[in-house]
Length: 164
Image (cartoon, rainbow, N blue to C red; front, side, top):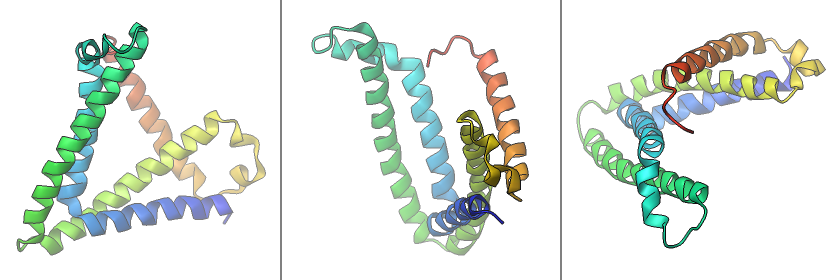
């Protein structure tokens, strides 16, 4: 195995460990909150940009300031809600099940992150490196990355109205 294989295993194990510590409910809430924050930033960034009309002259800077403000605001508010729900889950009888399912969620997230990492490195031109060709785990992560890329391209093609 190459050092890159150990990096991929590390990503998978760290994600599984994080899932075990946080539990499925907090992990799933976190994913929903991030998706909601991205959606709000993309969908309502233009309206939020109006709040920066007195401080920023450039319309593009205003748009991105509005998007960032919405993104951070939704993440903060969602984090408070997730913390409260997590608190009540920790006090309940489902803690063990929640953590066990959190491990499975973490493994799935780790597989997705490994696929995204391989895609990013491939775009960076690393596919000609010897460690790339010798990696034992890279073909599996590359397959996941290709599926994620294809799904993302399909979604972006369907939602042409969203400006990122």
